Length: 156
Image (cartoon, rainbow, N blue to C red; front, side, top):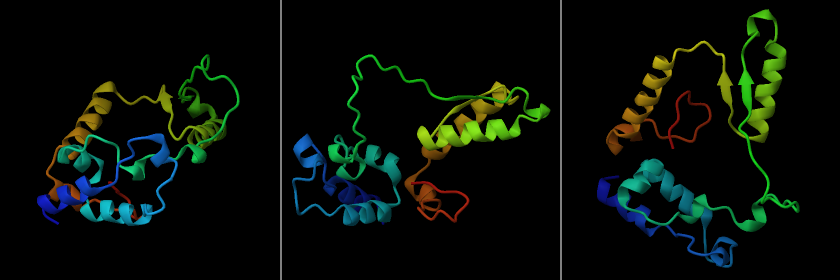
């Protein structure tokens, strides 16, 4: 698809301006169709930003009933991203570290690793490489767009 087609599809995506719509009060909303249309643009989330979208499309908003309910008071809850310390990994802590990684990935979906020995300069260059990738033209990024879990590299 060309840039104009991508912009048209993206700007026609339904947005969720209020909680009532997010909750699914619209029986004519077809999420599967909208996800398929989004995928076919191969523009990714950056394509949404580049097209000028100012509201979050409904495909990215979870209805309140799908969110985990917690009856506790969350006003005093403080979250801390799990930190995985690789210090001592050479001395046989691999099983313990692997368990920490699994737990963090399953409960949080991400974590921070410390004492990994990777120089800051390498980390900064990796982040810069990701930035350079996302700043490329849509046509270049489309080559990598996929939701196929069998592909080693995916972008969506």
